[in-house]
Length: 254
Image 1: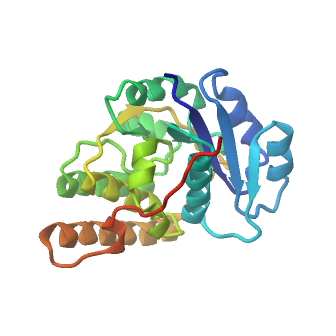
Image 2: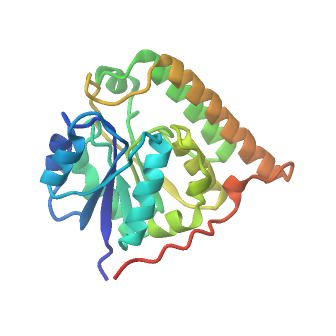
Image 3: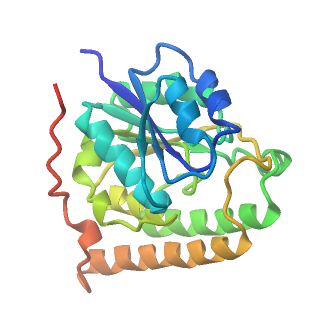
């Protein structure tokens, strides 16, 4: 039976790039797109609705993690079997959707990450700031070591999940900020989900969203904190809500 594929877009001030991102997604590879606007100051919402995208608007700015919480909750309510997150800032190559889907539809992986780091030269040539590359390599290496994985880019924003992943992981207990993504993958490892990655071309330009150096440092420290929680949980030193199986019952609408 064909699985229902929903693409979610966590958006904030994406008016200049949303349509380009949308047009790049291969037609026929998805059933629906959901955009959650985190109280943008531009006309992101108007453009989204003009493209026929199911659009949800936060009346206040809640943060990147909170935006994803709305994205995934709505996707589950609308019957998604597979959810792909694509940032509407045109940074990631949306043409890869059918290839990402293949790994999930054939039950090879439960989670697929779009890796920006195929080679150092390619990553830097795409415009990735040197400090961001260094932070990424350090954190990803450490995360692989602690979590027993072999993922090439733990900090990508291009991700795909099966419904089982979203129904199991208690993501509503995660941070409302950027470390939501790290917490989610740490939880995924804890619950035994299979994580894979595919190379994805990226574009760094002024309109594409990116956290600055100071926020990157804060994000890095919070990432280390998530790893410490994982270690403590596994060793029985301390128990955290992040690792309590989800009790969020979401039934698909018919």
